[in-house]
Image (cartoon, rainbow, N blue to C red; front, side, top):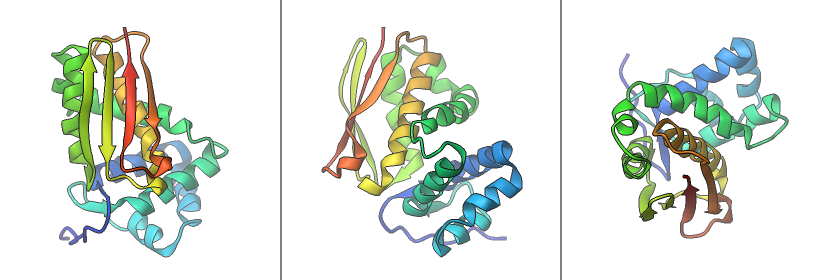
Length: 194
């Protein structure tokens, strides 16, 4: 089977992220639970999620975001913040596995510099820029997300939180001070730690 030629319209997400999310939902809800969630989606999202997902292909972010929203409705009563803990669990495995070099050999500041590199491999059409980085505080700017991608903010919070904790940071606080949902030219995340 050959990898699909995915067209790049708007923001897209790496297939490996889609695949890991599908696997996590199936592990938590079972195959029937996964199908129940997918069954609530539109045709485009159903086709994407029921098809073969190639880790190296790019997939449109909009149907993936609708999939996350449907999962939250079913499994978390619509609580979007549940994505923070769920993404922390997935990211913990990545940061202790394939991306372990990003967090093992550096200070929290070093780790934050490297995270933008990781995020650039997750999203196509999104720019990640460190606007400010001082001991104990960072401001990261994301350009390219649209308001309907708001749920990505919760997964990003989980990513930063877990990466900082693994790197030895304490009292980690991460939030979007300019949320994706506002639809501004960019969104900004602020992280603090001791």
